[in-house]
Image (cartoon, rainbow, N blue to C red; front, side, top):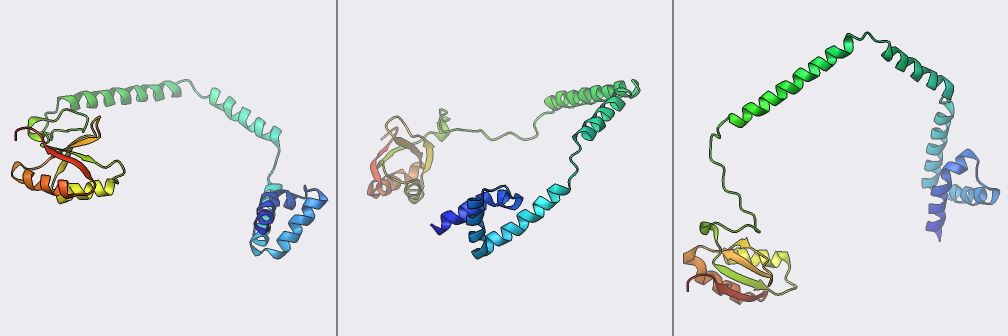
Length: 195
């Protein structure tokens, strides 16, 4: 109940400071503020804020008049100034296009490594040689631990049957299969391609 009173006092603080609360609400907020150090600090902050806002000039007509005068002075600017800006902008665009076109002709200095995403058909050298299926409730952390322990890299997956294709050095495939099959999170671990 005390927390609800505190929340209500916090929510009503701006109206409390400005004197816009009904007498019953004002009395409840005042009773809470009298016993709450946090709300007393908030009350001081709200009072300072209200004093600052009250000092602001609210001459709307003067604001509109100032804006109209600025717009009129911009319209009265010499016409020679605007085309010069447009001309410089045009030269800037032309220069940017020239740099972009020139960059297309620069030969690449070193070959870029081949990028392979999991959904893409792997290159022959990157093809997996083990398929593994984990228990449905296996966490990503346990999958990662199983892959590390078997020195396997993820090559593809998950497949439609929730299998993952792994890549292991050919000479380490038998050992990796044994480690994966011994892992309690693994349902199936089988070699792919060849024996």
